[in-house]
Length: 250
Image (cartoon, rainbow, N blue to C red; front, side, top):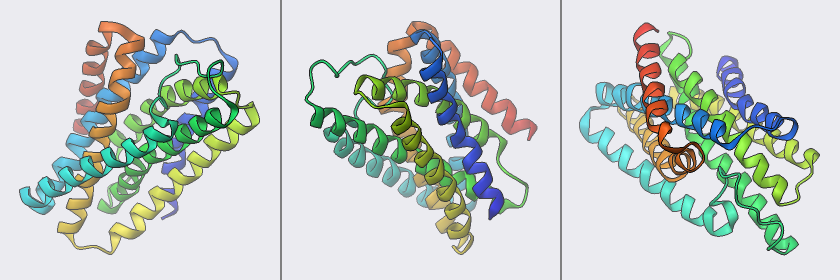
């Protein structure tokens, strides 16, 4: 249980590192896009090998298909709701709203960024904790993919929050909250899934995989290409190759 809490916190700490980099370093947008593209590739691999692969093996095709479709749909519905509250650009650093929004609208956008980031983190963290149930230790593929993808998220989102006039202190409180929620979600995934039958675990794993893939397509992929250019296709491919190698060697 405590290992799940620890690994959830470690993977989510990358958001704080990304925020620190945005606050104190001048990092070019294309580098952020390249890191994000690599994270996209590793997360695709993690979702395919660690979540869907295990779901198919443990629960069969029907449970996997239903769980995956449901996860994609639920994430999309929540993403639409949060986007209407100002969270559509939570992974984007280029949109400057400070000069064109009223204070209340800027606050709403900042809260949308925060809510969207929490929503993105929960399925990843739950399955990170659940990966410990196999008794073979934490999934290296999941830890690496989540950690790498969280760095550019912290970078881009922090720049967006700064443009919405959020202070450094308030930004740190928000990302600290994301870290705490991720750690608790990881521990919750371990405790909750431990009590379920194998087929239900498989369906929930596929559900998380569907949510992650929907998140990648709606937020990280567009932002990576917008900031990193055509090179992101190759970098994402190398991220996927890295996930394959980690999965094979672990």
